[in-house]
Image (cartoon, rainbow, N blue to C red; front, side):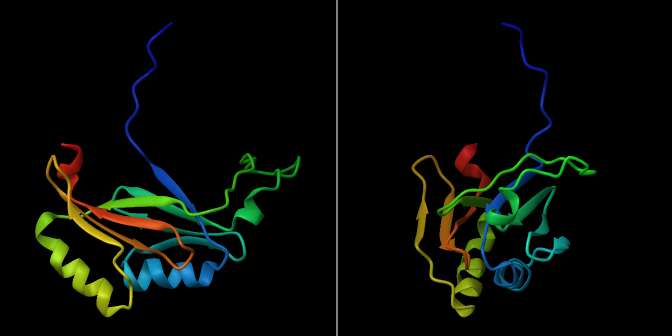
Length: 139
């Protein structure tokens, strides 16, 4: 077997939400990500550092592209809660926790990993598990 060519890293991650308006409000107003693209009823995309967060309506993306589609993206979509983790500086965790609580976001978990690094877990309006983590959890 040959060695795979090198990768540069993760470019985008996808979550699914039925209510794209609620998703857009959450990701822009609560989390502070800039919206970079939107197709009503299908998706809304956000810049997250060097990565892009894609939020799709699963029903809209499960359909195969038309034969004449300019962008023949294969169908995809899922049901149930997904997971998305964003990196945060260790000194920002208390401020993030306070900010989320003031916005009415319930913190599901807040702990320090055995190898070091803290994580905060909460949910977006679609029920996806969202994590803020100190990059040290993978150092």
